[in-house]
Length: 264
Image (tube, rainbow, N blue to C red; front, side, top):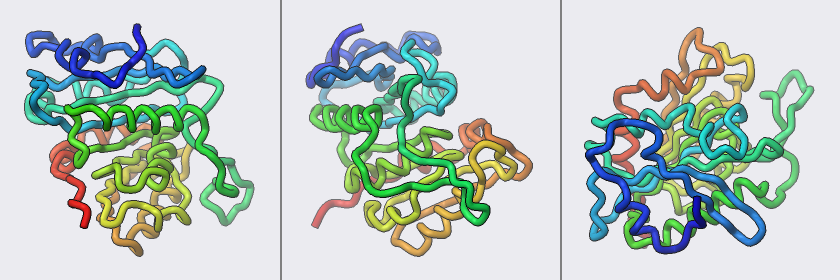
């Protein structure tokens, strides 16, 4: 593995449309910032053309895929973007970073209040180191001539859903759409999201890990803002609602149709 630099053309040109579908197509990379390192896997667009600009997708894994092997983060979601039909129809740069076992994407605490949704958020504080590295890496990628800055998408499941909803208020104006799956977020920060941001929330009705009330609360809160929010709740589905979400026939069509409006 090698340190990622600002020049990404060689990385994107590395992939070929002749490869069969397998996770090795997600090249192992390291994003190094000072003394800190973020393992990540990057899938290049099919038939990469350095003269073109491509959408960028950042996907944040759940707590079960934490580590340093730079592999486990592809357990859920990697195959969706490796699908040959999807790669041909939706050419994009897809990045799966990995959070270490000793940390998480977003800072939150479980609450003992029976009338709460299960979490407290506390006072404002800096991003946790793994999410800060993701944020810095996004900024690095946005400096590449092959990234379409109007089509940057963020998604994540479980712990990654928390990280997704945090980055939306940490980096307004960067993301064209978001897909938080069975996660939770601070509803007080919803007003800081990019105006008119398209968001598609997913959750399982019977989730025993992250209460469905979190996504319901975020949905109802976002409806009071300018967000273009959608919410899909799966009856009798537990914590693995990402399986259902990844099988939504319109998911990628919806995602890739979103684009940041031109700034006035």
